[in-house]
Image 1 (tube, one colour):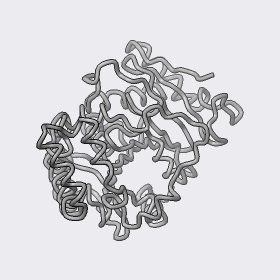
Image 2 (image 1 turned 90 degrees about the vertical axis):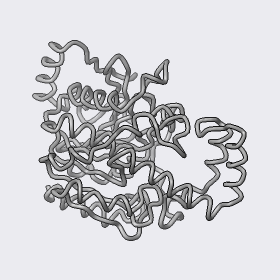
Image 3 (image 1 turned 90 degrees about the horizontal axis):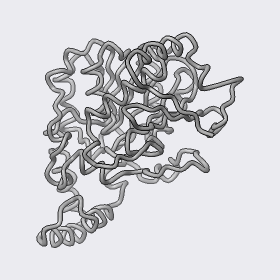
Image 4 (image 1 turned 45 degrees about the vertical axis):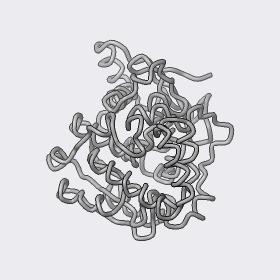
Length: 337
């Protein structure tokens, strides 16, 4: 049976926060076990925030490190590739609203970046954490930046992985991806262009089907073969929305693979990043054709106080392609604690 933590009126938030701060693990683990344990060290729960059940999983011990997945629209599942950090951190995996095992909205207009930020704050309060560390990958880095800008007093460390600082950057990366597809997969591109001449847009299922035939490794990997062994161990776990395409196009616009719109088109952190005082680590992959180095390398201009690292043998996922180098970097960033 799954347990639910309910976050409701402000007065109750205060009471719950005090209880969880004094006994932070009592709700999640009794004698080291949980009745809904997914594997021996991983404990999952629903919390109710903003009238929706959101799925979270906790693993490890120490300072809470929230792991925010990409997409927008992906479940947290692939973020278990960071599981080795559990030796020094309490990892908090989050399925955002409409993703993974979390509730699905009745109306797609309920999804949005500001909703993700407020949901994250609600989860922090529900779990009783004072300050948290944040690691956001790809779109998760967008929501991490938005959260850190609004709730900067609640963030101890901020890690931005293979992500984007503005809608303009996202558009430029879309343009690059499409150029790569047109150049290297002209047969796919030709079919796609014929479909678009007939009025199809990115969100239309036939358009999505053709676009998705481009091999994942081509746009996202330095060594595609490494992704064959990168499947997290979650035997028996159900993820009803491993990827929610309706949510994705709500965020990026109905033709978002070509012309960015929605919340992604409007987001821009370039002016605020320099004012963040917490330690910041930003990293990217040299062979990332989505968050490409040409634009990732501009991060030091907008966040000069941050440490910026380029992984020379990685694409969009250094945690898969150069894990030893990445996890040593993260350990050093956290002070070897």
